[in-house]
Image 1 (cartoon, rainbow, N blue to C red):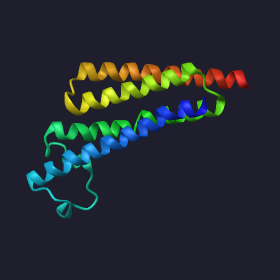
Image 2 (image 1 turned 30 degrees about the vertical axis):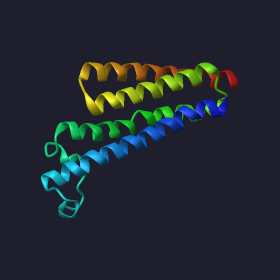
Image 3 (image 1 turned 135 degrees about the horizontal axis):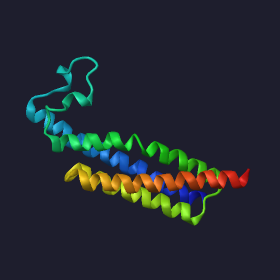
Image 4 (image 1 turned 90 degrees about the horizontal axis):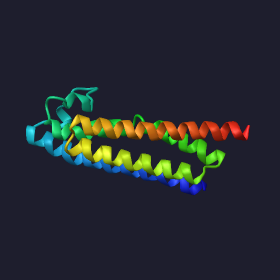
Length: 144
Protein backbone atom coordinates (compact mmCIF):
# COMPACT_ATOMS: atom_id res chain seq x y z
CA UNK A 1 0.00 0.00 0.00
CA UNK A 2 3.08 2.25 0.31
CA UNK A 3 3.36 2.91 -3.42
CA UNK A 4 -0.37 3.64 -3.60
CA UNK A 5 -0.16 6.37 -0.92
CA UNK A 6 2.94 7.93 -2.51
CA UNK A 7 1.41 8.15 -5.99
CA UNK A 8 -1.03 11.01 -5.22
CA UNK A 9 1.84 13.00 -3.69
CA UNK A 10 3.94 12.48 -6.82
CA UNK A 11 0.99 13.58 -8.97
CA UNK A 12 0.68 16.78 -6.91
CA UNK A 13 4.41 17.45 -7.35
CA UNK A 14 4.01 17.05 -11.11
CA UNK A 15 0.92 19.29 -11.07
CA UNK A 16 2.95 21.95 -9.24
CA UNK A 17 5.53 21.82 -12.03
CA UNK A 18 2.75 22.18 -14.62
CA UNK A 19 1.48 25.29 -12.80
CA UNK A 20 5.04 26.66 -12.64
CA UNK A 21 5.37 26.29 -16.41
CA UNK A 22 1.89 27.77 -16.91
CA UNK A 23 2.87 30.73 -14.74
CA UNK A 24 6.07 31.32 -16.69
CA UNK A 25 4.24 30.86 -19.97
CA UNK A 26 1.84 33.69 -19.13
CA UNK A 27 4.05 35.93 -16.99
CA UNK A 28 7.03 36.23 -19.36
CA UNK A 29 4.95 37.18 -22.43
CA UNK A 30 2.97 39.59 -20.24
CA UNK A 31 6.18 41.23 -19.08
CA UNK A 32 7.49 41.45 -22.64
CA UNK A 33 4.26 43.07 -23.81
CA UNK A 34 4.67 45.77 -21.14
CA UNK A 35 8.38 46.24 -21.84
CA UNK A 36 9.43 44.77 -18.49
CA UNK A 37 12.71 42.88 -18.88
CA UNK A 38 14.68 40.83 -16.39
CA UNK A 39 17.94 42.67 -17.11
CA UNK A 40 16.37 45.97 -16.03
CA UNK A 41 14.86 44.62 -12.84
CA UNK A 42 16.31 46.07 -9.63
CA UNK A 43 18.48 43.77 -7.50
CA UNK A 44 16.45 41.63 -5.16
CA UNK A 45 13.25 41.98 -7.15
CA UNK A 46 10.56 39.37 -6.58
CA UNK A 47 7.61 38.10 -8.54
CA UNK A 48 5.36 39.94 -6.11
CA UNK A 49 6.74 43.18 -7.50
CA UNK A 50 4.70 42.49 -10.63
CA UNK A 51 1.42 42.96 -8.72
CA UNK A 52 -0.36 45.89 -10.26
CA UNK A 53 2.00 45.79 -13.23
CA UNK A 54 0.75 42.65 -14.95
CA UNK A 55 -2.96 42.01 -15.43
CA UNK A 56 -4.66 40.14 -12.57
CA UNK A 57 -5.48 37.10 -14.72
CA UNK A 58 -1.76 36.71 -15.43
CA UNK A 59 -0.89 36.99 -11.75
CA UNK A 60 -3.50 34.40 -10.74
CA UNK A 61 -1.19 31.64 -11.94
CA UNK A 62 1.58 33.01 -9.73
CA UNK A 63 -0.77 33.21 -6.76
CA UNK A 64 -1.80 29.61 -7.28
CA UNK A 65 1.79 28.43 -7.62
CA UNK A 66 2.54 30.08 -4.26
CA UNK A 67 -0.47 28.31 -2.75
CA UNK A 68 0.86 24.98 -4.04
CA UNK A 69 4.04 25.65 -2.07
CA UNK A 70 2.10 26.31 1.15
CA UNK A 71 -0.61 23.93 2.41
CA UNK A 72 0.50 20.92 0.32
CA UNK A 73 3.71 20.79 2.36
CA UNK A 74 1.57 19.49 5.21
CA UNK A 75 0.07 16.98 2.78
CA UNK A 76 3.52 15.73 1.77
CA UNK A 77 4.58 15.28 5.39
CA UNK A 78 1.34 13.47 6.22
CA UNK A 79 1.77 11.17 3.23
CA UNK A 80 5.34 10.39 4.32
CA UNK A 81 4.14 9.53 7.82
CA UNK A 82 1.38 7.32 6.43
CA UNK A 83 3.80 5.59 4.06
CA UNK A 84 6.01 4.72 7.03
CA UNK A 85 3.14 3.70 9.29
CA UNK A 86 1.21 1.55 6.83
CA UNK A 87 -1.61 3.32 5.02
CA UNK A 88 -5.01 1.80 4.39
CA UNK A 89 -7.26 2.02 1.34
CA UNK A 90 -9.15 4.84 3.08
CA UNK A 91 -5.93 6.84 3.36
CA UNK A 92 -5.15 6.33 -0.31
CA UNK A 93 -8.66 7.43 -1.27
CA UNK A 94 -8.41 10.54 0.91
CA UNK A 95 -5.03 11.37 -0.62
CA UNK A 96 -6.48 11.18 -4.15
CA UNK A 97 -9.46 13.30 -3.12
CA UNK A 98 -7.10 15.93 -1.72
CA UNK A 99 -5.02 15.98 -4.91
CA UNK A 100 -8.15 16.20 -7.05
CA UNK A 101 -9.42 19.13 -5.00
CA UNK A 102 -6.04 20.90 -5.23
CA UNK A 103 -6.02 20.50 -9.00
CA UNK A 104 -9.59 21.82 -9.24
CA UNK A 105 -8.60 24.70 -6.97
CA UNK A 106 -5.64 25.48 -9.23
CA UNK A 107 -7.70 25.40 -12.40
CA UNK A 108 -10.37 27.59 -10.85
CA UNK A 109 -7.95 30.12 -9.37
CA UNK A 110 -5.84 30.36 -12.52
CA UNK A 111 -8.80 30.88 -14.86
CA UNK A 112 -12.06 32.07 -13.25
CA UNK A 113 -10.92 32.95 -9.73
CA UNK A 114 -14.23 33.81 -8.10
CA UNK A 115 -13.73 33.67 -4.36
CA UNK A 116 -16.81 31.69 -3.20
CA UNK A 117 -15.98 28.66 -5.36
CA UNK A 118 -12.25 28.92 -4.68
CA UNK A 119 -12.88 29.17 -0.93
CA UNK A 120 -15.23 26.18 -1.00
CA UNK A 121 -12.62 24.07 -2.79
CA UNK A 122 -10.03 25.21 -0.24
CA UNK A 123 -12.28 24.30 2.71
CA UNK A 124 -13.07 20.85 1.29
CA UNK A 125 -9.38 20.22 0.61
CA UNK A 126 -8.39 21.40 4.07
CA UNK A 127 -11.00 19.13 5.62
CA UNK A 128 -9.67 16.11 3.70
CA UNK A 129 -6.11 17.02 4.72
CA UNK A 130 -7.24 17.27 8.34
CA UNK A 131 -8.82 13.83 8.09
CA UNK A 132 -5.57 12.42 6.65
CA UNK A 133 -3.58 13.94 9.50
CA UNK A 134 -5.98 12.54 12.13
CA UNK A 135 -5.79 9.11 10.48
CA UNK A 136 -1.98 9.28 10.56
CA UNK A 137 -2.10 10.12 14.26
CA UNK A 138 -4.51 7.29 14.99
CA UNK A 139 -2.37 4.80 13.04
CA UNK A 140 0.74 6.01 14.89
CA UNK A 141 -0.99 5.69 18.26
CA UNK A 142 -2.19 2.18 17.41
CA UNK A 143 1.34 1.17 16.44
CA UNK A 144 2.86 2.55 19.66
